[in-house]
Length: 310
Image (cartoon, rainbow, N blue to C red; front, side, top):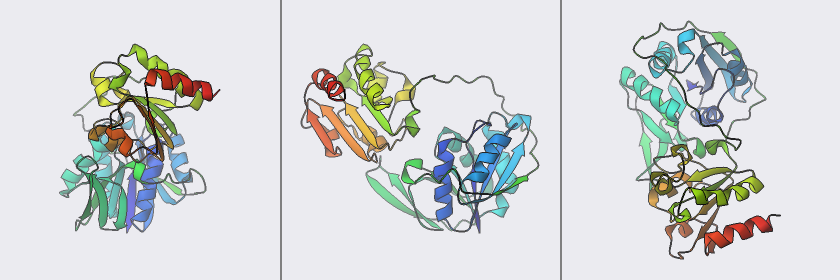
């Protein structure tokens, strides 16, 4: 029995989500192999080989795999799928685009966004916006799984010495083509990988007022996020959104400013190690998950916090 992790990468380096997925795969029992499908991706494969717990890295290198098109990567996974009892990918846009295609072709039921491995055939996953945990048991010969990365520790990036094996690249499916990629550029940490996040909600009042949070984020070296209400109001870009329909995060410190705490938002951040809430409404739902709560006017509290931080 062996598990295969589909590496998320940009050809030059692995995404942090891959390390969390390796941890989940190791808990399924047996060896852990990693598939790096890309173009000129030797650097990413070398990083995968160094991850503690990984015993083999499969490398499929071809120009049509360069941009991670789901049709091609799914076909590459299917080419080796019969050698594995478990196939896992992070529950990111990348993994969610590939694995449903794999599950459909294998005629198995995908198990989505697991947060715990109870046994090789039994997993836990959140349902109802995280208000309940479902325990799912699968009798499928090959388990196809996406992993909610906040539920698993990151596997150490060093300490491993896995063998690297080149595998034949599948033919280009020819059903899709890469056109362009628009990436948000920021000097701040990536939201899903940040250890500290400062998020604003509708209580900020406007996009201009979000600048009030920048000095606090700068002091803490934090990423900036937002609730769906703030994004829908046009205050900040969509890629700042934290929540069930946004990004799932679990930083060491999450500061929620002017966020009431709708269930969809709580589902995306309630696993944070320490939560600080600032809201003028003492009955706001956000206080039910906060470790520390400040009831007050955010336009006074936030500048005071910045002062206290020196």
